[in-house]
Structure formats: C-alpha cells, structure tokens
Amino acid sequence: MNNEYKILITGGPGSGKTSIINELENKNYNCEHEIVRSLTLQGKENGIDQLFLKNPLNFSEKLLELRINQFNKKQNFNNTFYDRGVHDVLAYLNYIKIKYSKELITKAKQVKYNKVIVLPPWKEIYIQDDVRYESFEEAAKIYNEIIKVYDLFKMNPIILNKGTLNERVEKILEIIK
Image (cartoon, rainbow, N blue to C red; front, side, top):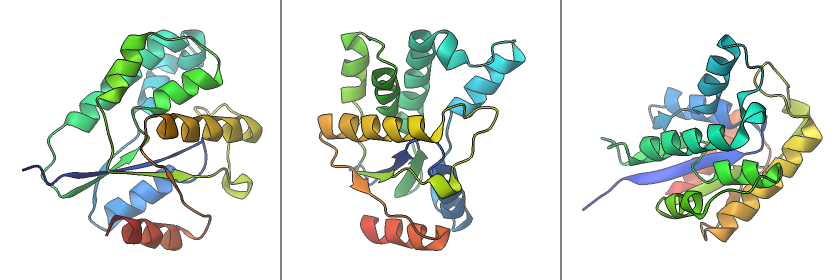
C-alpha cells in the first residue's frame, strides 16, 4: 500500500510558494523544489533571455516531463510538498494561448495530487527578477488559469489566504491533517 501523500503548493508568479516550501523544509518536511528557474537560467547561460517565450511549446514539453519525473520519484516520507505542479504547464500555455497536443493532456491526467493548495496574487510581496518577467497583472491572470486547470482535472484547489509565513504554513499543516 502506498502511504505517500503528495501536496502541491502552486499559484501565480511571486505569490510566496518558494518561501512556504523553504519554511516547510526548515520544519523537516520533505519538499520538491521548483524546476523552471534552473531551466530558465540554463537558457540565459546559452544566450536566450526567456527560454519559455522563445519556444513555449518545446520548453513546456520538457518541463512537463521533468515535473512528471519529480512527481513519480519514490519518496521515503509520508508527506511530500511540491513547489509548482505538472498541470501548471498547461495553465501557462493556456495563458499565452498556445495550442498543445492531446498527448500533454493525457500525460497530465496520469498525475493526481492529494491536495492542491493555491496561493492568490499578492501585490505587496510581488517582485520581478531575472527569471520572473511577468508583471503583477500578468501574474494574476496566470493564477486564474491555474485555478481553471486544477478544476478541470478535478483536484479541488484550496485557496490559501494571505498571512504571515508562519500563519500560511500552519494553515497548510492543518489542511493536510
């Protein structure tokens, strides 16, 4: 019997996902970190400023595979938290209105998180950087696409209210009990 409980922390860019993941890890929870930053930084090293924007479909197919592998990785813990999920890839493609194959949908259907916790846009903590190129308004639109995708895949996303880092982490731990 598989006792692994997979909890996704997702939301638009700059909503506090990575801070929460880092805090959960500090509390000795098993966490899988976001993959997209390393892909984007690799692209920059090869002279491509925004790899996703240069070839969104190719980038997304590669990212989807990496996230599926991350999801399927055998964990030796009861709970694993994920910073962004497989289905986020489809949400981003929907946001930029790129058509994608049914194969991507089929692959995404094979992944189901036990809980999907979505962080809403939060202007006061939003910061653009070398990898996060979206404006706050764009981040809010991406958030809406993320909600739609997880609803479509019937994973019942739970919206996590704003609060201090500790309040948000405590709420997440309550949700998974």
